[in-house]
Length: 379
Image (cartoon, helix red, strand yellow):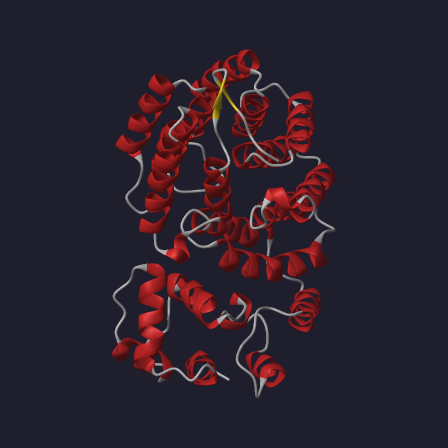
């Protein structure tokens, strides 16, 4: 079965017209796709590029590996015949895994390219889209783990996968972060070992969830290597957020200064990847941290610095900055005004661009209040 036939059959399984499919892609990804273009896909006159393959995977709820031809397309349709296309189920994942094993799977360089793509897409796509796609990749990569470098790939994929679950659920996210750390250890790559632990620490600390785990993973990263790196920077900033949420202002400010010094040596030029920490993103970290600490002047300066360099293609992060202002209002005593300000910022962002982290931030703002100059965080 060629790709055009598959797109047509998947579209019809949902009962959509060609125009409806174009509209779904446009609404989800901010494109200007036309019905005629979809028609050309289905008639195999034009082959969708990687961006539109990812968009089709998201809106049609089908593994990217199927669209790319890495999983037999006709067998996939047979498995789901008679029903609307559902999220990736166990049988599909097992099929993809066995297929990867029998083929020998992608090369290490191909996996590294996939990681780069996911790191970029995570910044703008919804958690559900990324979760569904990475689950299939994890099943495939686990069939190739004879190569140490693929343990590094697997660990970084696991870390992104963990981020698609709310850290506050107490199980799934933490489970995957811990597994990612163990996988990184198998690689023997200290850079990956530090990055995975640091990324988990900043994710949990920023979300205000599982703070004990955030500290443990950050401390492990610091014990592995003190060499300035993005992983070390994430670990230090994760510990800073955890300290701020516990009310330990002195430790939080000290760690923030440590983070600034590490950033000066290890900050990245890459602007739009989850694996990067450019200047604007460092200031997003600082904006929330200083808002939590009640340093309004410092928080506003960080917000302004972030806005100056924040890519226009990443509106979700602009929403983060606006919600930080809502938190500042709430912690200063105007809980109603701060909540309304943050809710307005969140509502202005298209729902498909929302992230679990933004929802957790909204909950923190709704549940926060000012007392003795400290930000209190309800469990």
